[in-house]
Image (cartoon, rainbow, N blue to C red; front, side, top):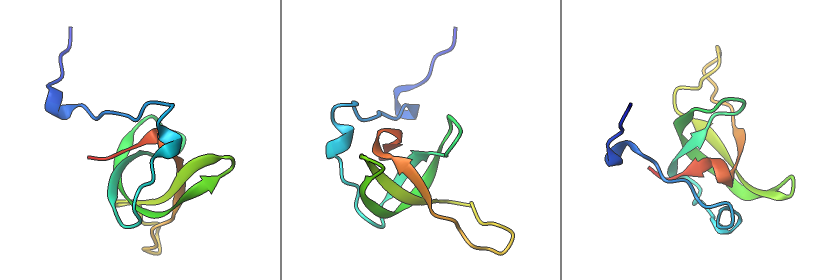
Length: 83
């Protein structure tokens, strides 16, 4: 068996609540990196309804490409939580 201390667990929004959460632009969140199941710290750059679902555009920490530019990535609210 494996155990995790409570302080290492991030609570996710309930599916019914995710559409009502609006993350402030510039805030730091933990967001699921696209096409993975891993959460990384990110900065919210945009928030709104996209593709029929409340989403945020975020920039993940340490996600620079070879030119040093940090891409913006779209993440649904249901995959975003605060630290």
